[in-house]
Image 1 (cartoon, one colour):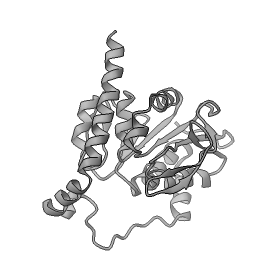
Image 2 (spheres, one colour):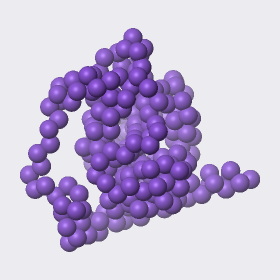
Image 3 (cartoon, one colour):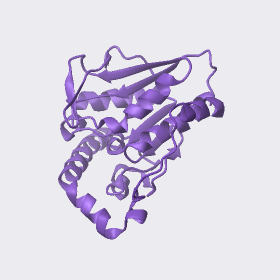
Image 4 (cartoon, helix red, strand yellow):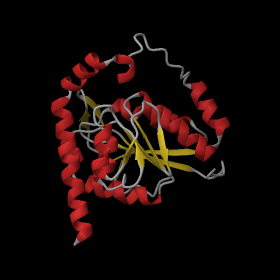
Length: 236
């Protein structure tokens, strides 16, 4: 549903130790460049920490200070951050009132651990996409943004910008979404054109899966444990 342009669009991006910045930065920038938007980088406190690859960063707003928002953005993060109950509670709380919840890369697993994928069509990285069914989702194996109600999910990196454009189109209209796409000159032209398994082929896809298998397993195990705890609590 379109929001009046004179109504401020409030957008929260979850940042935390081990956050994979390519999953959230472009979405944050796209919303920040759009008219009448108010953006928050949110974490437990405002102390600096390291994102993935030792990039120093700090939040601008704490969990306690963050207001209800129209858009919540969640990207991949370290297993330790994924396992944090305060973080999961924050996501669940803000998602209840958000017009759009964006999950990118393994950030979709985080949404799954919070119980937000149940009955929803969703996608993620190619090597975990099918596992989303463990969180009650209907997996969609694609490199495009998957939209189901207020849930927007996509694979890593470029997916965050494409999801943001979809949300801007839904909440602010096509004209503003087009302006942001052009302002950032988003017109991908990858050198090797192997950006999804269908293009890359089985051998290269397997090599990439093997390269990140330890991290993938850790993230999946963490998300499964958190989701099961929620399910057990619901059954009490």
